[in-house]
Image 1: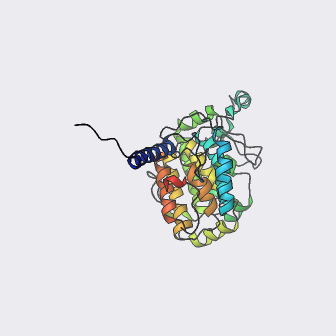
Image 2: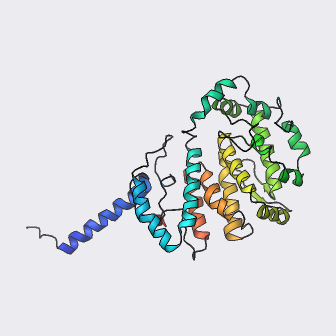
Length: 317
């Protein structure tokens, strides 16, 4: 029997199906490929199948994203939220890829190789600067001292150090050597856990399970949530806490805390002052990609559908 030639409609349908399949695949596997999706963000690797430790090449898509996405989002009023997300995504991608552009401040690493100020602070051998407070004093004397925790701005960089500079120039960034030492020290990690509980209490949250990182509202949550809504600089602190947990041995604590904030902001609507940061920053601090995807899907399902959800490509929604 001779096969009859396919009709034009059949051929066109087959081509369209293959194009759709290819387009969906490239969203999930090749974030650096050019795309015209209005909510495609070249700095978000959440939907890549293999997240490299080096920064992907992303220059090709910039012109396309400007001519298609930006015009579309300007016309339909989504530009503000998307640009805020894109700017945040650049920072969070840099964190998740272990700061490739910082080159880990090699000069400072050589200068402080023997000192390791962050590690020594967490082992109780050095005080913070400029406050002059030791780690055990923070844990014993600052617990439930809410006014002090709110008004002093030089301690958070010591309690939750990062590989990037903060507002306190007397708090040096972490080095790789310090991270290795920290991860090998039970004392340092126990003290970090105490610091985490200290700040959770400040925010009206309790650590329910030290093994899983599950958290819940504290008895005084209403009062503390009011403070969070009034003083939005705490959103920066929470982002720092999430990053530091991921770097210093508690990456499994990230997702439970982010889920908590998503529930409070999107479902219970108790933290409107935290909502933007939870979506732009907290979500994308989670190092575990599978957990990050689950959180994005939860955020999408809980989001006000009258507003565009810009934190995931439209093609995947």
